[in-house]
Amino acid sequence: MEYKISETLTLSDDVINELDKCFATSAFNARNGSRYIACVGENGDYGLDTIFDGFAETVKTLIASIGEGKNCADPLVYPILYCVRHSIELFLKMSYEMMFAIKGIKSNKSTFEKARDISLKIEMLKKDKRDPFFTETDEECDLVKQQNQKIDETIALLSEQYDSCWDKILCNKENQMTHNLESLHKDIIAIYNVDERIQTEYDFIAKYLEDYLKRDPNGDMYRYLVNDHNKRHFVSKGIQTVDLLKIGEQFIHLKALFEDYLSNLSNIHREYSTLTYSSKLSRKQLEEISFLVPKPDEFSSMIEAFKIQIMTKYQLSKSDFDKALKIIRNHNEFSWNTGKELLCQKIRTDVLALIKQCACGEKEWEDAYSFLSKDEFYSILAFKEIGRYPYQYYSEDYYIIVRDFQNRRLDRYALKPNVDLKFVIRGMIICGQHTYAELLKTLQSSDKQLIS
Image (cartoon, rainbow, N blue to C red; front, top):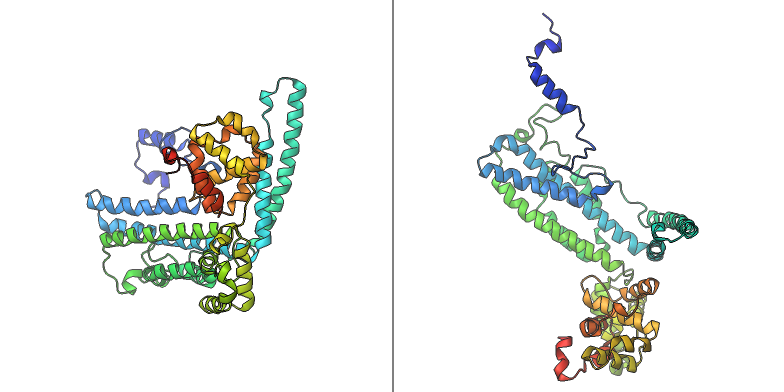
C-alpha cells in the first residue's frame, strides 16, 4: 500500500502548531536582541581568525563534555576531528594570505608606498567632514552638506586608486578556496622563503601536521563514514580507535603554535610596511648589520674586512652590500648605531630647556608653549607618541605621526611636560635622537622620577 507523507506522520495538532510557530520566523537576520544572536554580516567584523577561534573553542567544549559525562566519545569523534582539521585549514589559509601580502609589499615597494599615502589622505579627508546637525543656519547646513559630498567624491576616487594599488601588490595570488590541505601547504612552501624567519618557523610547525596533511587532505575522512569506493575511511587506513583526550592535548599545543606564528607573521608584515628593507635583507637584518658597521674613526681601515664578513654571512653581492650600507646611513635609528646621528627635526636647545623647566614645575606650559615653532611642537608630540606606545611603532613611523598631527592641528593641550617627558625621551632614543634625549635627561636630582 502507498502512503502519502502526511499519513506517515503521527503528530498531534498541538505539535504541528508548535512547529508552525517555530518556523514562522527565520533564524537568519533575526533582531530579537538575544544573547544567542551571532553577527555574521558587515557588523560582525568577521575574519578567518574569528572563525578559527570558533572551531578551536568547539574542540575544547566537545572534549570537555565527554569528560563531564554529558556526551559519549563515539558520536562526537567526527565533529571533533573535523573541527581540528578545519582549524588547521584556516591556519594555513591565514598564513598564506599574510605571507603573500609580505611578498607583495617586498616586490612592489613603490606601489605599497603609494597605497599607504592614499590611505593617509583618505583618513585626513574623513576627519575634515562636519556634521550638518551642528550648524546654526540653513545656509551653513547646505554648505556643509555640499562640502561633505565633495569630500565623499574625492574619497571614492582615492579608494579606487587604493584598491588598484593592492590589486597590483597581490597580483598572481593563488585562489585559496580549496579545502585541500596538501595544496595549501604547497602554496605556502612556494612563497615562504620571502623571509627566512617565516620559513624556519613554518617548517617547525609543519612536522606536527603530518597526520592531517597526508591522512585527510580533502576533509572527507573526518566528515563521512565511507569514501568514493564505499570503503570505510578509517578502516581502509588501518585505524580502529581514536583517543579524543590525546587529540585534545595535541590540539592545545597546535593552537598555541598557530597563534604565536600568526602573531609573528603580523609583526613581520608590520616590519616590511616600514619600507626599510632591501631585496636581500629584512629590516631586522639591516639593524643587526648597523651595530657591526665600523665607527667613523676606524671606518677607513676596517671597511674592506667588514664588507667581506657581511657579504659572506648574508650571501650578498658587492651591489647588495652597497645598497644595505646606504639604507643604514640614511636611517635615523640605524645611523646612530654606526656612530653618526641624523636629526629627524632640528629642535632648538632653548626649546628643550623650556620643556624641561615646565616638567620640573619651574615654568608654566601654557606660557612656554608659544615659544615653540609648529615643527618643533609636532616633532616633540611624535616622540611622545612613539615613546608611550613603543610596541606599536617603529622609528620610521615618526614622519607619518608628524604629518597626522599637523593635519589634526593639535594644540598645547596635547602635551603635558610633567607627565609626558619620560615618553618624549624614550621616543627620541627609539628614533636615534640621543643628543636631544640626553639634554632632557639632565634634570636636577630631585626631579629624576620624571624620567624613571
